[in-house]
Each structure stands twice: as C-alpha cells, then as structure tokens.
Image (cartoon, rainbow, N blue to C red; front, top):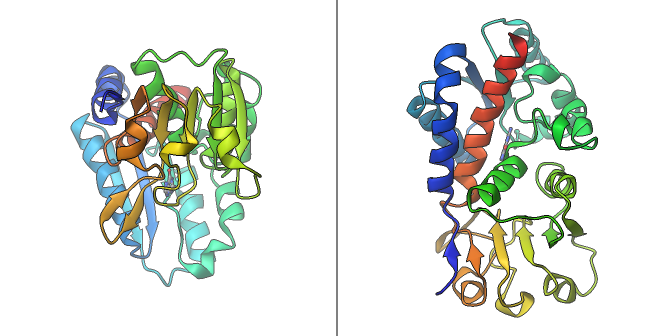
Length: 280
Ligand code: GUN
C-alpha cells in the first residue's frame, strides 16, 4: 500500500493539545445524556469521557433507564439548559424506539449555546452563511475538516464527492466543504450510476453505514478517501470502504477504527470549549 494513512489518533492528539490551555483557564463541563443501553453508544461515550479526562475537562454521564419517558427526558434537558455549571451537553443517539420519533423535538429543546453536537437548526443554519459562522458545527463534519487540515490537504477547487445525506454528516460536511471552495457533489440511495460520480472524486467521503460498499472500481487513482463508516460485522468493526483494495489506488485514506472516530471526539471537546468561551 502506498497511500498515506490519515491517522485520526495523531490529528486528534494535536487538536486536543491545542485546547489544553483554554480548558485549564475556562474549566468547561460536558454532560452526555444516555437513555438505555445501546452497546455502540456506550462504547462511543466511553471514548468521549476518556478523551475529556486526557485533557483535564470535566464531564458527567447522565445515564437514564431505557423506560425513560419523553417528559422525563425533556425535564432533564430543561435542567441542563438552566445549569450555569454545564457548558454543553449532548443527548446520545440513537434513542430507544419509543423516543426515536421525538428526536427533532428533543434536539429543538436544547439551548443553542449549549448544543455542542451542533445538531439544532440554529447552529446548522449559521453554517450556511460562511466559514466564520461555524461556531458549533456538528462534530463529525468538523472532525473531517480538522483531519484534512492536519494533513495539509487543501479542498479549494477540488471535486469532493460525499456519499450519504444525513443531517449529522453528509449535509453539514458538504456545506463546510463548500464554505472552503470545494466543488461538492452529494450522492445518496437514489443516486443513479453512483460509480460514474465517485470515480470523478478528488476527495471521496463515505458516510452511508454500509460495510465496504465503496469498492476499488468506484475510485480513481490518487483519490483521498475519508471513511466515516463504523459498521459492526461478524468480522469486527469495518468502514463503508473496502479498505485493502481502495488503499491500493488512493493517495491517502483513513483507517477504521482510528480515523474519523477520534476526530469526532476531539471536535466535540473543541465545541464544548467554544461554548464555554461564548458563555463567559
Ligand atoms: N450517535 C452517533 N454519533 C453521534 C454524535 O455525534 N452525537 C450524538 N448525540 N449521538 C451520536
């Protein structure tokens, strides 16, 4: 393999180190609300707390039972919105089935200044203006931008193909790339002849949640590949990209795990520091 490995471990360590002095002076606090026992969520949350601890940031786990009602969850959110000691908080997704249909209302109820996931309409809307208004961008898109920056990969004028149109990754990362003068194509489940489009990509971002769906015949030589997928399969964790085959053609590629995942955590912590700065 000749491709450069885009290590989220290295890049996130650099991002976290750059936050240490602000964390020491502002003493921000992150709260993660978890409802139920989704094993993937528990593992992500563990990573978040580990990183908080590594940079000396206060964090708290509000772990509520799977039977929590919408009223009880909303009550907790209202309390966190009002608590001056809490700089930012997130409600870990997915939620148990009975709450899942209420996710838009739940996100809407989070005070925008504390919305460190950047999932609410206020923070998402600001991103549409330009780069200077990306105050609390969603953590995964922001992590992807920080990773590209860390490896000096300039996106201006490049054709970036984003596969996936979720509100958490595909849509916001497309906007952040546009803010940095990339030419962006967004593909999704209804896109016709996906390979014809992905083969045009200078930079390919895969965020669909389907194991190894991006195969070597779908990319051109020299492509930069960012794999957002975190799929649990019988063979273990794997991304949306067929790593071994695609790495033979790519100039740079993220591993899974150890690529985008640690960048998401670093960006969440960065957002929490920013939230604390803006609340000063
Ligand atoms: N579930 C998977 N990723 C995320 C994330 O970035 N934030 C929240 N709240 N839930 C998630």
